[in-house]
Length: 568
Image (cartoon, rainbow, N blue to C red):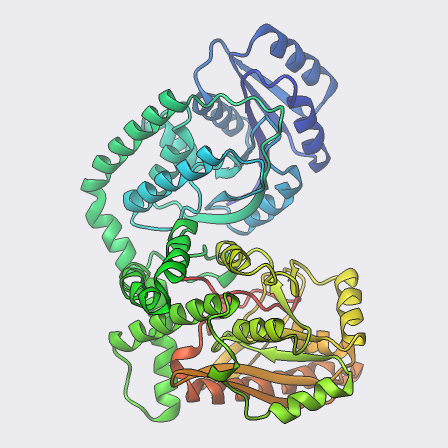
């Protein structure tokens, strides 16, 4: 599929903000289709002047107000007739971040058949009633699709593939007002269109004009969900088959939506606070059972990994029960993170056999890179270090994944984000910042068992659990640039507590130019062997629930990242 995008702005009486919105969008150099949805005379005058002054703007007018959906669908048809393949819908009131346009376009170019759906990250400006009301719609969309594929069905920042969208709106009557965004998303999903979710900042301007009518639009949304629910029933066999078959979900981990909702996470959080750890752990069983039944991708990935472990160790082939225990261990690890940041786990439950080696590192005053994995519970050790002021342990994380879980941990303890270094790309500024921390004797914790989604990096393929697997070169390159000691660092759940495994990896990572490729491969193979040894020791505690070994999952990688696991 070719990729020829345009921008699409529906507008109704936003004369004060449309000029600023277009001004922010113009630097991207794309045609801007503005559809006037029957605005008043003052807004029409502003739009006429804007179209005359800005050559990128194409102005279309509807004779009377038909609703946001009517304007968007009119713009889609006009864009399709003009030869564009995709339309990026963005609101006229300035609440969407125009700086994110290149990210939407990049994801759309990589996945031209998919809808690229904005997943809002709100600031304090969001009206609380609107925020809480979205959870009701999220719940019904999950039921109507039997899926969490649509990260936020109400967000109006969205890139549509026009062939699929126009085929739908020409065949089916889609609601035209505040119920439009959700209705078209659900029906596109029913037609087999894939969704990619992209976190994006949303700000509600203080002087913004809202056309949301509390009673009338909530009634429309209720009526829409009623119709979608009953329309879903005859499609139920197909949706179930897609769910059980997996729906072709084997994609790079960074493109997989964070599972669960902020509401669900807050319920677990509240249960822990009010009823204690035991009650919260009991709550995990029905939650894990639900995700076990509904996520074919996670089941397949777990089975594949556990089968490789069994073949390597000479054990029995895993059944579905083993995969359930694997997912349950992952959920329990998340609860332990929460408990650690709330002060529910102390040093008496953590065994540290090589504590002397760690103390010697701290006493030396040298900074170091600690390479871990999505194995066990590294975050718990950072919480303990922070709480006891043992050391400054910085976690380098990929900033766009697991936003909801990260916010919950931050709510549990204000210190959570103090040494959390969120990195979206690895450039000179990031390198200087990390080098400064190493020079101050601080520790950087990075994971090495996941390939970040950066487009300008590389991976190396080494043997892991008996088969070639891609590992990011970034952690080794970073350690070489920082010119500091490197250690392996894992924290495994054993019996009723945790054991920290801390071992030297290299005094320095040396990558001479002529031997760079061979040295990188050797270091990564050394890391993969040690990771394999710990996976064989604690098979249920490696948490990468996607096809780790498939080559197209190994998107090029540059930035080393301690990415949060997708949350169950």
